[in-house]
Image (cartoon, rainbow, N blue to C red):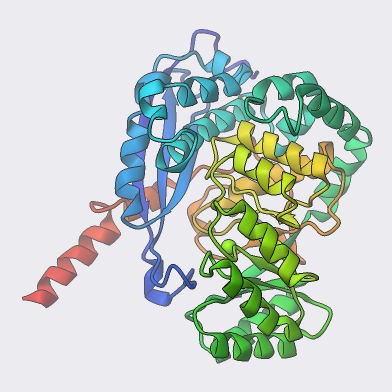
Length: 449
Ligand SMILES: [Mg+2]
């Protein structure tokens, strides 16, 4: 704890902001299920009376009107948070997660899934941001420096113990610490491997795909990703274009964003096999564990990846138990906060499945890099076959944006979870009253006359 957080300081307010960016106009982020996304954040600030002490910032990622519901869900958690001592939150953020998921009236809406769980994730992540800031460390280092016993106490093992016990987790974390100092030094020196999705949005034409794929290779990325699943003939053409641009040695993943039934996923992926896809991502519903297992058997040696819409640690547990995935894709803002993602990282480590996080959206790269870096430094100790997704959109709205050098995420150095948005961006893109949207709305009214 830094000195400027007095033991008496408390959370005085939970501010929520509905932030939307007009990304649909350039087809940035377009895929087979989301043709016109306006990338958005339901953003939360835990304000305190600690003078110039830190605030906790967090958010969850949604698309446009989804924010109407998401912000209301965060608002419903306010009474659980206001009045808590900052020192208590910083010492035990996991206890906040347990209290929020334990609210029986709100739990009925889940349990532990969907809008309510994402709202809890936003608030709990803000508490983790506050805790790391109070410690004066970037979150990845805050986690890597923490005692294994403390980390295990942050995790809710309910529903997990048939696959991962507390003692097994403790053992994994204790072994993970061996050599952590050297790995932290290596991480600061060369960063963590990234791959890029920027060339492959479904709405981009072949010229833009070619140009961005060529740039990705020149920028040092060793993996790119293409959106697929709307039209097979288009996918064959686009995969051919991309493969011819990047050559045989750059990995090329494909991502169907849940478009297919199980049989279609197998057939479609086989039809693209000549282009040597490294993994097929979200081939079908994120809830279909046995479906993923069948697809995995059907498309091998192409790997199966999923996770960005997997709602909680229990579904991840089952995906691993069923041998349904080759690559586990955590998302920093879908499950119930850092503590639940710690559980998922531990499950993946136990089953020996590499974690390649989902990112992009609004601020997801900023958040999730911390979790992979912790995993490398103090859990699995490896970056082999592990890459964090990178999309080069909207980073300019954050005070501590990700930095990519030679296809690697640089390790953040600023204290916290890299979640803080610039006040100017909040003022401009708050919906519907921010300066951008107010002007946009006025213009639309005018042209309608
Ligand atoms: Mg995806």
